[in-house]
Length: 219
Image (cartoon, rainbow, N blue to C red; front, side, top):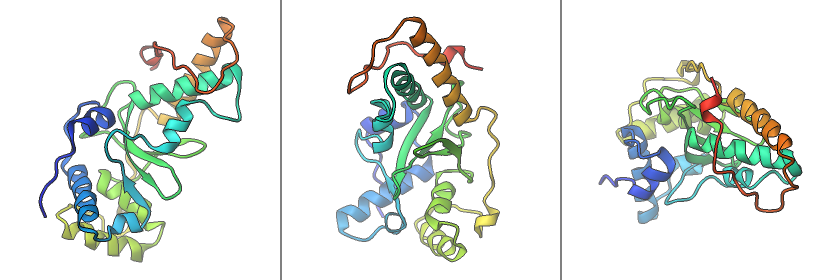
């Protein structure tokens, strides 16, 4: 299978210019080659889809425009907090439910080699189990079923990906000192206070994201 490097636009937008890890490179290549040849991609069939070009996950784009169930200061604060979370993250995929999957670099910008994987759904951020993107998306795609996990693991290892875990229970939960959900809540609170103090006007659609961000003020 020929290797297809992610283009510069993808790297710059989704990973902040960081070097693409080998497992992500292989997964992107596999999806691209399968699409070009018309072959089914097993991860796609299981509900994991890697991004292409300059597109962000639809849920992230929606949150950056401001939540429709909020207005005024609350809507602006959530939108600005999400804009900062994009700076702290490297979103590379979506699942079948529209949840965004990516690397968590955090305010201190962890190197991609040690950055945990996370998922953002309609309500919160959570750290995914897995040592790297291949293990993390394998757990997502298996939906708690060890038979599906085993079948997909065989498929991915056959494509040259290294996955040491034999079952879902073998996949480790990484430690994360700066929880993405905790940071997100801190950002919302900080922006709510800032905007309330300046008497921000009610927001229309789309929200205008502020040019400054609060990252340097976070622990």
